[in-house]
Image (cartoon, rainbow, N blue to C red):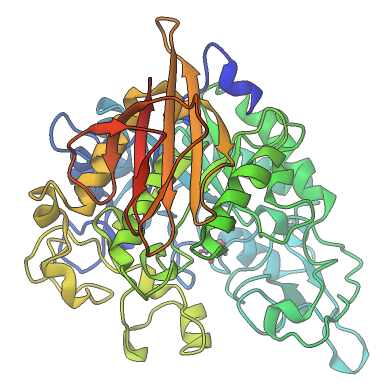
Length: 549
Ligand code: GLC
């Protein structure tokens, strides 16, 4: 696979499992219905404690900076502080200290493309054409007859240009109008952002998840984007000029230089799936841009053997030498995968198989809070919605609020998240589907996640080994092998076999294939059984993890 897998001292983030926390929804400590940092801190032992913990290695916090929250924190009004809803800088430092004491790394979200329109940089910029920060944002005059500078449209709907009566020019915003785009051509913008990066790294954070990076550069001659026939909304244009410019890569190279002073820090990029060269282009030459880049293909792919096989046999190998894959099935922008992978048949059985795949495929896995208990997409009424994007396209698109409902900790009235009315309603099934109930049941989804996390932690093959896809076997099944040398010099080999169909299947691998021991099955209890390659049996929607002899 990747050269780095064979290095003697692989970086921590290659074998780590990340857990994304949506701060609004993880744990409320002051009972205002909104999650906060003290709440998160009180739950760290759940994530990585001596006993009964899930057992992850790093948390990624969606934005916690001061923000008017038009885009729930992705509209930052101060990059070097904490939003009062979540706590104080001191609360953050306490959280960081406690996390590190437990051996848990902490990743901040960093929004580079835009700020809030309430950020003092933007206030200053819009105040006068003579402001020293005027060029920090993208300002332009309209065309004749009051037309906008270009036809560009925004990711969240409507045009990307808004007239500012104070500034007497249009400003560009690729997302909401409350999120003006920074001008990354301006060296002092980059310098200011790199100061932000140092501010947090100096406080001990372990890296950043970088938001929407392919938007960083624009063609500042503002040419019109060509139209695509037959499509609507954001996709009705070819986004040739309003994103995906070389400047985005130049900026990532510059950032990589900045963090080289912090050898353990990791950069994880989020780029649109249709950026030229794909998000993987942000690995650069493998060592000069980002260490990790999200691959959202599994968030878009159907639940079938073909697409997972394709992911493993074509997409993962296309990552440049030196890059390292990521495995992501859910996040705060997409419907949760337990529902997305199909509502017919047994969604829970598929979620169990998805857990096996997430934690055994090659690359760094990212769990989204609550997926370990099988949290479903909330069924929200219009009046419950908070996210402007979700509201705008409701009920035609699933939107984002349904995947952001409060964490389900226990069977109490607000699921142990808060004692107040939660900011988004909890689903009615939280009384059965919650951490407390599932942790007490060895057959629960939670117990499966925990077992797989423990197996992965102890297995060099699973956490950072090479892999190959086994092509033999029925077309509804996916089989792959992971392999690595252990500290004692022996070779460890693991095999994963998954039946994607709702029928049982029985088959044989070619003679000479290794025997082994089934360490985990997604349908049976933890009990182990022997693996006979001459007579493999997988139940409907069953996955097995096998240690080969
Ligand atoms: C990213 C974030 C999303 C946000 C957008 C604009 O895609 O994941 O939540 O709304 O960028 O910052």
